[in-house]
Each structure stands twice: as structure tokens, then as C-alpha cells.
Image (tube, rainbow, N blue to C red):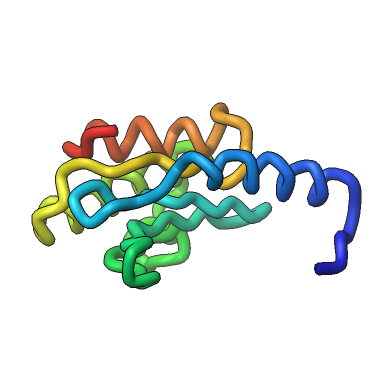
Length: 120
């Protein structure tokens, strides 16, 4: 894998260190977060089958059309994901911050998911 820059390399190393311990099981799936400069994406993954069960992002029209900050959009994504997960019968997950620091948009997404009813 070609490394673009030092920041990317650092995040990938942290991500590998996290993923060594954070594994999703059928009763406790993994909530993974990806953050780009403009959007934030979250998905609940069944690691046993390697399938994404539920996904949400700030690119969906209901969230992207709201005129709020990126952190507030992240919170809305978390709530949306939690709502979909509860409908599918998923209540507990393992949080995978994907190498990002737990502050800002990643923290907002986690708080939104907790407010929505997910337990982690």
C-alpha cells in the first residue's frame, strides 16, 4: 500500500493497533467511522460475514440539506444510524474510531448514536 503522507501513515498505524483488539461479533457488531474533509460516514459491520448491515452518512439528503456545522451533521448521522439499527434489532455495538482521535466530529457522531439508543 502506497502511503501518501505522514499523517495518513500515522492514522493507518493507529487503525491497525485498534483493529487488533476491536472485533465485531454477531451479538455485538462493529460501528466503524470514516471522516473525510466534507462528509462523515458510519456503518455497522458484521465482521464474521464481512458484510455492512447498516450505513449512514452526511451525504444523505435529509442531513446534507440542513444548514448546520459539520459536528452537528455528525451528531445527526449518529442518531440516524442508531434509529436504523434499533429498527433492525441491533442495540449494542463496538465503536471503531478507525484511527481518528476521539474528539470533534467523531465524538459528536458517537454521542448522537448513544442519544439514539445504541449502547457502547
